[in-house]
Length: 372
Image (cartoon, rainbow, N blue to C red; front, top):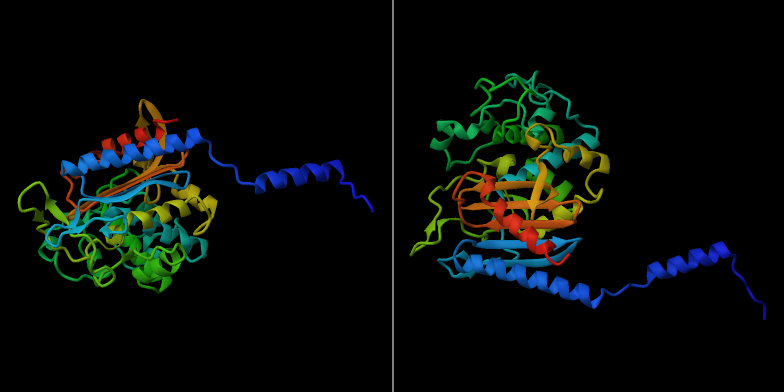
C-alpha cells in the first residue's frame, strides 16, 4: 500500500484547521460565573420592579451572548398584560441612530455626501447654504428646537407631514453659526429625515424597512406613523406608583417626532441592531468609524461616545438615551468589552436628562464585570 506523507507545513496547517473545527467547551468555572451574573442581573431588576422603580424590558449581553432578556411589570395595567422581552416600546431618540445610518447608506450609494449643504437637497431652506449634513448629524447646526414652538403644541395630536414639521423651525434665527458649537436639537434629525426622503424617493418608513430593518430581520421595529404595525404595543404611563396608575396625559401624534424619535421596537430587535454595528452588514467599517467618532459635545452621528465609569475604571461607551410621552430608554454599547445594555421603560422619566438612567447602567455593567 502506498504511504502518503504530508510536508511539515501542511501537517501544521491541517492540525490548526482541525483544532479550529473542534468546539471547545466552556470550563465549569466559566459556566458558574455566567450563571451567577445572570442570577444577579435578574434579581437586580426584580427588586426595582417590586419597588415600581422599573417597568419595562431589559436585555444584557456580552460577546454576543444574552445574559438577560426579560420583561418586568405591566405593558397594560388596565388589561393586566405583562411586559415581555418582545413587547414593543416607543424608543424615542434611539431613532436618531437609524436616521444617521440612513444618511450614511445614501452616502455609500453615492447619492449624497455629509459635506453637502442642506440647500442642495432642500431648496429654499433658510440658512441652508451654511448648514451641512454633517452639522445636522453631529448636532452643530444651530437650528432652533422645534419642540419649543408653542404652535407645535397647539397641534400635537394632529397628523403632520415632514415638510409641515420643518415649518415649526426653519424661519427661526440660528442659535449660533453652524459648526461652532454643539447643541442637541431634534430639528436636526427632522431635517435629516426630509433629506432621506428627498434623495431616496421613498418615505422614511419605507427606506428604513428596505435598507435596515428587513436586512437585519427586525420584524418588531418600525416608524409607524399610521399606528397600524403594533396595535398591542405597551401603553405609556406617567406614574405607576399611584392607585390607580396614571397613563400619559399627552396624546401626541406619532408623526410629530418623525426621524428624530418616532420609531418603536423591542429590546431583542435592538440587540440585532447592536450586533450588526460590529459588522459591515449595512455600511463599511470606515463609515462606522466616522459615525462613532466623537465631535463637539462627545456626539458622533446619532450616538454619544464617552466613557462609562464602572468601579472606578473607564469603559468606552457608545450610547443614546430616549424619552417620549410615557416612555424612556437607554442603549449602552461598551464596545471594547463586547457588552450591550438595553433598557426600555413604558413610564415617563422623572427628569429630562439621560443622567437619570446612567447609574442603573453603571450598576448593570458592574454586575456583568463582577465575575471577571
